[in-house]
Length: 342
Image 1 (cartoon, rainbow, N blue to C red):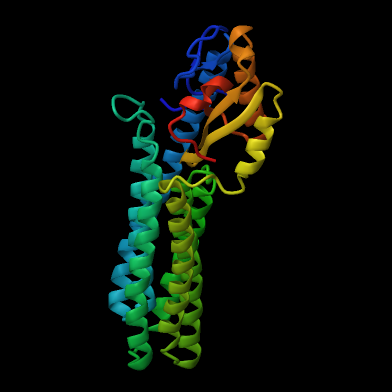
Image 2: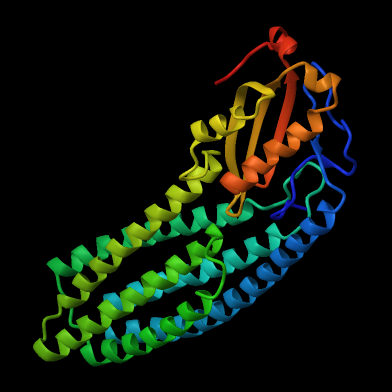
């Protein structure tokens, strides 16, 4: 099981020197007796939030699949590339919503065995897949749209306008439903990006249908498709960039490691910090680890647990990081370090 807000990895249930090994590479984290109940409450709230998000995803998925089938038939009958592009995009929407729902349930599985964080990064993989799907579909639509600009085909503007208008309504409802979910999860944000892009696509297609009805300008259809591709490209880049940062274990955005180091060094017992790392396990689980060099007296006078408490309070209070692992080392141990990092 992952650590929800208010819980810190590695803490032990009694206020002693548990896990602290002088001069070695093991450090547990001090824990107050009531922390377990506090953390369990947050974990329960997180589970409830995941269940609600799953329901919103399922509702949106059902709506999108039902409309997608009807739109594909209308696109074939009317000869509209814009409608066909929208139907193709809605297919990726359905895939994105289905993958997001699957990833959400997979991420809820408890940690065990080799999967020490469980399957929480399934959400990030789903977001990356959503981004790739948008890019691939966008490329296909772009090639076809350029060909239709050069060699325009007759488009039935009335069918395009009616279907696109219904599509706007359906996507507005689906987007509204999914908008209630926690878009702080990159997985949910990816599915929402699909729906929002499709909403704009339908608005563009509706405008193209009106133009075709009013002027007979059939090229309005592929022009609308190219605008849809631009929106898909933007959403794809944002998803791939965000998921890539997580998969490459970059520090959370707007997270200043230098500031973290300075806060840690403000403790009078701390003499230096090395091997400082920050990363994101999944959307709502940032983590930090570090080697903290403290005065030798901390291990002799029993101050080590209090130093750990202060370090954790610093990370949680100033940087909203509840999952932290610190290795306390006496200053006399530095000569045994085989390798140090900034």
